[in-house]
Amino acid sequence: MSQELLRIVDNIARDKNIEKESIFVDLEEAMVSAVRKHFGELDSEIVVHIDRATGQVSASKNDEEIDIRQLGRIPAQTAKQVMIQKIRADERDSIYAEFVQRKGQLISGSVVRYESGTLIVNLDRWTEGFMPKGEQIMGQTHRPSERIRCLILDVRETSSQVKIILSRTHPDFIRRLFESEVPEIAEGIIEIRVLAREAGYRAKVAVASLDEKVDPVGACVGVRGSRIKNIVDELGGEKIDIVRWNESSQVLVANALMPSKVSEIALCFELGRATVVVGEDQLSLAIGKHGQNVRLAARLTGWDIDILTPDEYNKGIERLTSCVKSVEGADDIIVDKLIALGVISVLDLDDVGTNPLTSELKMEPDIAEKLVAAAVEEAKNLAAEAKQKQAEKELAQQTNTTDSEQEG
Image 1 (cartoon, one colour):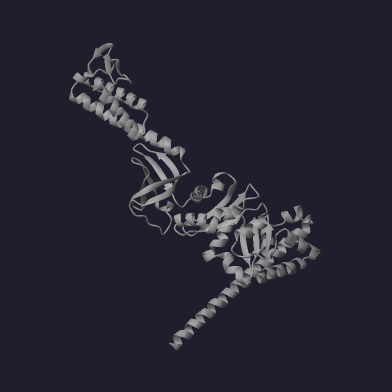
Image 2 (cartoon, rainbow, N blue to C red):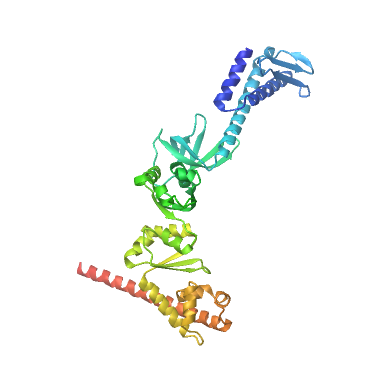
């Protein structure tokens, strides 16, 4: 019987990943509960000890030795129930301790089923992970028994179970995939400085090399695109742009807007805005489908990016110049200073206000106030013109619709 007990403890410890000592303590406490229930004496001093080497059980009540094997069926049932509860609690603690250390890491599992949109993933023999709908890549479905990789997003301990929350949409999922596919990143030679992602569609990853001999973009792409292909395949075809990191905001913004080619960039630090000029043929590429390219570039760089064609940029400068020159005491030099500050339209001047003009450009306060006041008026005119154009456009559309109906 003693050897059988040791074998049972060994099996439970191995299967449930629980320390053997914890199981011995649980067994002793369960037997104490059984003895106490049998005698119905809450104040009695009851001690149960299991010899860790032999499995021999000894028990006493108020220092008098008792044979717990003689207690009967009901105390045995009590001991069993207490034991089950304690082992479940130990198992929860073991699972929590293991997975809370792995939070933020990649893990592989096999798909079990969907439950109300949540994907249940088997992580090992006893542990399941939960991937809420919002953490699943849109458009991807997974079959039972399919092997998938996920990010351990969170580990929560509840009274009944440990909830391991998984994700495939979190930006760190891509970060960990790069670490697993690109040895130079795992070794710290290449660093992912920042990344922006719209899961299932596109991601931009800015990389830098700590070794000038190693090309960060080339290393991430791999020979004939082998490394990036593995990551894209894992993500179900999500596009990934590898961007070369640069400490210069101007260079970084230009890199982030690739594959479009940038003609000119004006940075307004006061507004956190980057005005980017691209050719007519590059406009749709710079903006991207549904504005995705410029949106991800803005998140990657931390700048609010405004894309303009050369014609729009020049019109903005012309209107700003005209507005500035309408103010007494202002000249072309002030226009040049405003452009250097990143102010390239009357709307920018309206947004910036007087403080940067006096502090950065050392402008006289009265001139600064007059310039901003003139910009406010010109901004109103612009808004009125835009409204009128929109009204004319809508009227033209209505007229075309009416003509088409009459012809029909």
